[in-house]
Length: 170
Picture 1 (cartoon, rainbow, N blue to C red):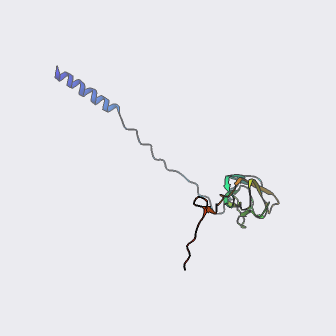
Picture 2 (cartoon, rainbow, N blue to C red):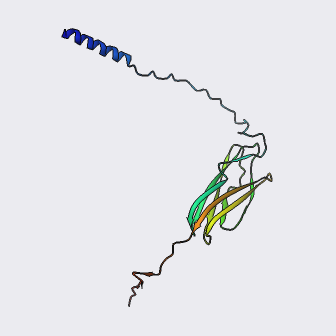
Picture 3 (cartoon, helix red, strand yellow):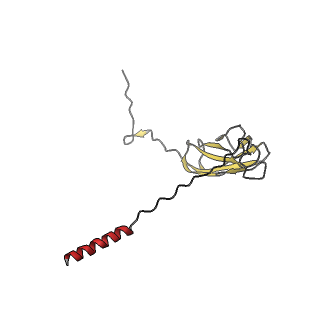
């Protein structure tokens, strides 16, 4: 009887092992890539001569402390047929400084426009615009907001109301 039970158990074990098969590996397929000649037309996502796309046109710095300098980057992508050139910019005050390349942005290419803000002398809610003008005559407005909180006040009196004494050499 023991032999029959052992044989049955061994059979069940073998059947169970045969039922658990490893997953077959997927067949490798060769990817065919088309090579484009160097004279191929550049990437164009629009039928327009001038057409751009932004990753964002607004930014919120949140709450910052007066005197802080912050920066954010806006990414411009040329999705038109012609190169894009930023010719001028206009800001609302000297506290806002845009940085960008004067080089043409070719179709399918992107460029970073970095906008900085110096909060020195500013308090409360700030809402600033940077207007970019392109060689096509088109304009784009980039906006940022923040709340400028007061600087931490420094108390000249320390040590329970007594003035700090400085050591001097005699």
